Amino acid sequence: MNRCPKCALVLSSASSLEGLCPRCLLLGTLADPGEEGQSGPGGELEVAAVEAALGIPLPGIEDFGDFRDLRPLARGGMGIVYRARQVSLNRQVALKMIRSGRLAHETDLRRFRSEAEAAALLDHPNIVPIYEVGDHHGMPYFSMKLIEGGSLASHLPRLRSDLRAGVGLLMRVARAIHYAHERGVLHRDLKPGNILIDAQGEPHVTDFGLAKLATQETQVTLSAVILGTPAYMSPE
Image 1 (cartoon, rainbow, N blue to C red):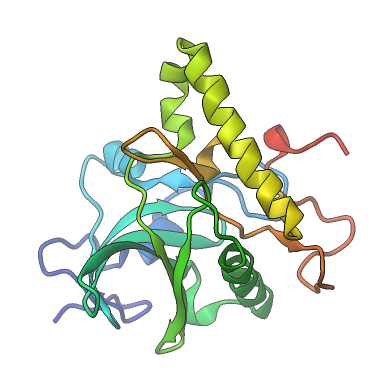
Image 2: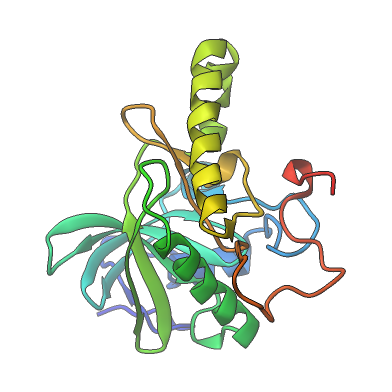
């Protein structure tokens, strides 16, 4: 049984790169696309693009609690999302783990929990639903519905030549965000990388890592700290 020497997660025997799991590999060898809560390019980095740049597939994780055959899908400033099979329910899910794992700072842990809490409050066809929130040997995670069509960012070239489809998609996203606002959830990092497109072309808003609950006071957000991705932030 192969384990990552940094975080001790069980690795798939089918593939391994420098003996590290995808999270530790990405942390150690790739330039950071921008931390949440700071200015910079920001945004979720789809792992397919990373694999294309490296010319090899990234290794998966074999076993994580009730989940098997984890394959990396994307990473953001705080977390990494995997495609995984949930054994108990025999279904494919998206599984998000905090990037720094057991070494996560308390602020990161609060923000990670806040993301799950914010998304769990919302039941809308155009918002990715949360299935389960848990902790496996000190590694916090939550599972979500798996949306396999890629992010809106990868669909922009097609939509630029189909204005009607683009406007229709934007209207559905706007209605989903309005629904969230009515329930006191402010996303604060809405951008193409955080909108997933399913096989039927329907958009699904995800990544509530910077969301604010209007009904709660929070210690996660500090005054004078820039939150979100500058190119997609509202002027105020």
